[in-house]
Image (cartoon, rainbow, N blue to C red; front, side):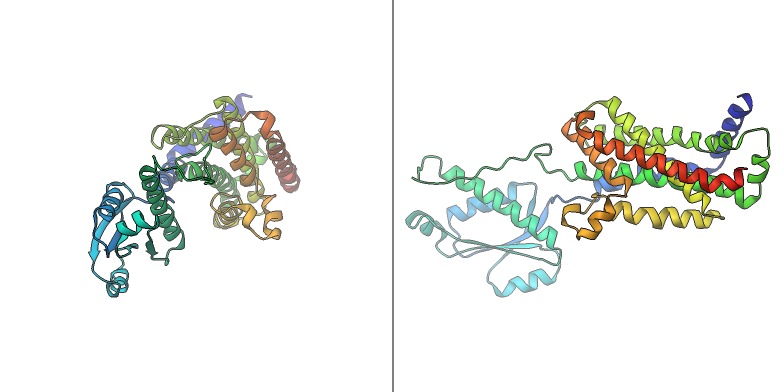
Length: 368
């Protein structure tokens, strides 16, 4: 046991001496969570728009003021006719143009109907759709204000309510995904590189013939990364809570347990990668290219799995990250307990055992 503990201490010293490894372990996760949290968002703020007001009456001015006072839009330009619209869009600054029809206020009073046309720059379809929805929301709110004392018989008014993320903050979607990507890549990549480094330098055979048993060599290589990955997970959760104001509705103990389970899953996958890799470069390429794209594309992190082709939905079932993201969202946003996520937990346990058994079989010839 003393030899084993000494071996683990040696691995910690080796990691802390390697500045590149420390940067990957701690610098990359913090940079990624900050980047995804602040830079990548589905929300809009201070989007430049232009106004074409054919009516120029009190009602249109009131609506324009409401739009300008919101944090979502900034009125960049007032244009005089339709001929200027194309030129405004071509400059690339203005993302939408609002057109008020002639005699807007008069039509609203006499006919109870007035038209506003919203023209958006759809070179970015998602942004265009979001701008349109936000504008419609402001107009509907204004309409409700002026209709407070007006009763219309047989009027059907749909009411929508968003649960778990009522403000539709995109950071609530990105944080679980980023946490999954970081833990998967860091754990798998660093473990595979650590073991292949020994194989590449020719010191793995020395370790295997040492008094330390083979399984202790592998466990000693993996244990430091379990500890360091747990620290990463804690840092990400703390940043999510205190910087991005993301709630953790469920049990912190359950969140910690599931995170450790996923870390062990990723580490066992890293060991498996090391068995089929003879060099650090090969292990890194497999870890980055073989894991990053499936984790990002097929885990439900960015793209909803239900919208994918049926064949891709089947493939997504073998991606551990998919199940961990479901677990994270359930615990952090919905506050669910183990009774609601037991199936996903069992799947991760089964995958972990599968990777470990397969790794042992692959290592069997070398370890004997």
